Length: 259
Ligand code: ADP
Ligand code: MG
Image 1 (tube, rainbow, N blue to C red):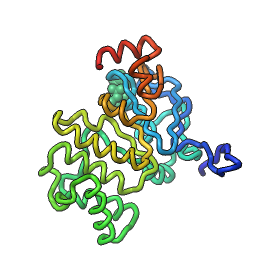
Image 2: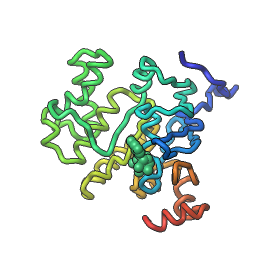
Image 3: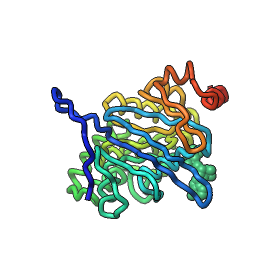
Image 4: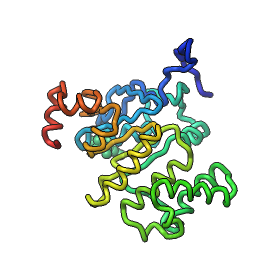
């Protein structure tokens, strides 16, 4: 059973300041290699948090732990204050609340674009097919791909595939979207169309946790930027501060390499 943690409720607005996602003291080892070291991080409703850091710093592992694709012995994850336990039944429901978008799109190749988007609605949410189709069309319209509804993923460019993957994740009405380098497998000319869909989502108030090397996106869209190195959060700050005046030497060094 989920455990309710103490919420601080504002007596005037009745709102709680409980974050959508709260990661507490998360550690992860692969064999003897400690990849995440007692890491804690919260994402508030409507917040866009961008994670940057060198390859191997643990960014993907962090997202995989949030999704329980990796099992950890130490650490707790809360969704809207509810402790998520590593139990299949609860995890199935929990994962529906997370929209995951990976570097590689993982679309079902034997299904049309619309079917890809509908699949979760029909299989998991048991929505009638015609209703799911309408929903899929709305979502495809939102990512600018309504005209591709009936083609197969093989017919699409990488940028289009990634936009379908975003539409598919959105179909489940997630509480938070997790992106792991969604544009790093794309040809440079296709990066913009994916970032612009993500920017639009952010404007509409979607809560997002995004691993990316796209500094433009981080500086324009993020509310907060987190720099990870060696499995810890070295520094976090609003993008302006992070990019113009990083405090930690390790952050300065990393940024000097990429900016
Ligand atoms: P990032 O996404 O920041 O590049 P990762 O989370 O992928 O970093 O990897 C962090 C560290 O964990 C790296 O040293 C990587 O080699 C190691 N690692 C990642 N996945 C595995 C795995 N399945 N088994 C063993 N080591 C892994
Ligand atoms: Mg990675």
